[in-house]
Length: 269
Image (cartoon, rainbow, N blue to C red; front, side, top):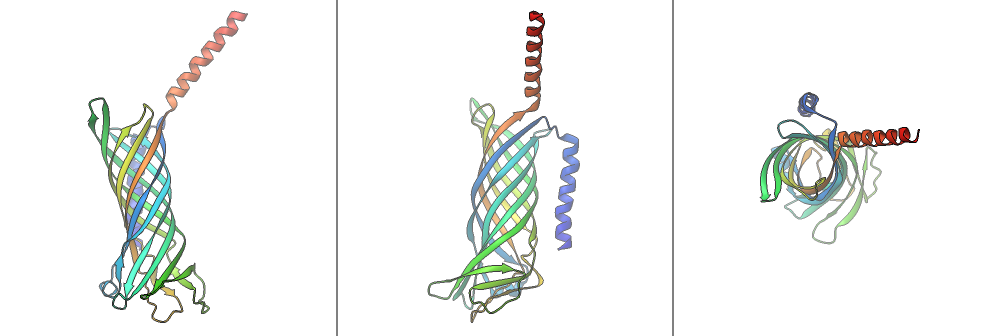
């Protein structure tokens, strides 16, 4: 895990060094984003991959974004979002299905490179690619398990001693902070002179396992199996609506207004 965290830390340091040289805080964009996602769990251990058959889980993400333009058609973006995803495992000859849904708060930053093109003769747009680190905090979870019939719902609690409750799955020695890398591609187009819409397809490569090497997932149901030594790979398709701000324009407007007020006072005298 130390190597994986070091990768994310290295990316953050590179971005901060790059943006410190190119960032102008006079211009920026604020926006809201939302969209569906598909997550699938991946076991690094080949024996676990044979034991469990992982299938995708559908979810969604929604949050806010701030974007700063840089030089040479680069931009720096930072996001905070709520994300719902999870895992779905089949085991015991695929007769049992264990589905768990997870809720996260995602913090991400990315360096974006844009390439202009003409969407229409009178509309200038951009295609972009971006890459950056992602840090997620695991809020809570719940799930269900079944074998042919109606699944049984259960709650998931973190870091508690199992007490034999049939409707509680106890996750112990987990990683609440999860690190990963985001890679995205998309395009944007203007709606007005100050408003833009962005559409992006993003692949998130989870680097941190849900559980540590000695983690456990305990549910007192006969035949239950689980393992938390897996990370999540997530594909997200999102739409973002942004508003552009230019502090220099507002300062110039204020300066002009002050001059007009000053002239009026002088005339009255």
